[in-house]
Length: 268
Image 1 (cartoon, rainbow, N blue to C red):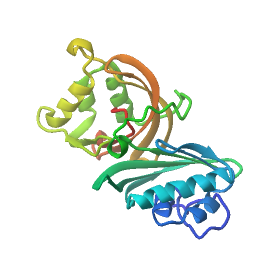
Image 2: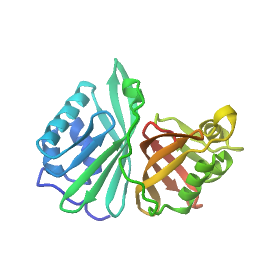
Image 3: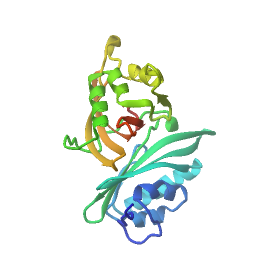
Image 4: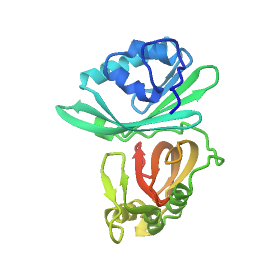
């Protein structure tokens, strides 16, 4: 693997930016992280919103770090993929909320731009944390030229048609979907839990099929895993306010999907 690019000034934090972002914040290294990100960085978070540039970014990172410390935040890295202009880290954020530990799947995207500029976008469901689903405006413009592998294209097309059988057919036998809450559904004989999940998600008014339509924004793909940022514009066959989301698609040896992991408050 190529070395991680160093976008900011020397800070002591080494590695891919998506990889170091949350570990730095949960370990009280907000100041070092601000130096590493640089004064041209932008960060967008479902709870804390969007900020860019210094000194606002430094204050923002200190606020997030303090918020995590009060909730005994801990981050467990799960997976990583890098593309030509962005890297994506997946993991689980553990927090103590109202005396109970919750574990929230999180994806962090670090987009590398010219002139040592970086944009970080975090995707996770806010429901387990504050009881509210975040309605998040689009973070990226629609880009129909974004290329995705054939099983991902087939999966998205089947979702748009509201065809649950075709969605499940895009998975390998024993393939899994992990939703934004951390619940996993497996493709079993006859579809099993995975088919039941998509039957529910694709049901429109009166039980008729209803598609889920996403507009592609950008992706990172290493030949085996594709992390796609998108905007959801149709759910249960009905138009909705455009909302940002991200899903990670792993291909198996068969060429079909071995695993799909969804991040954000829209189920896709």
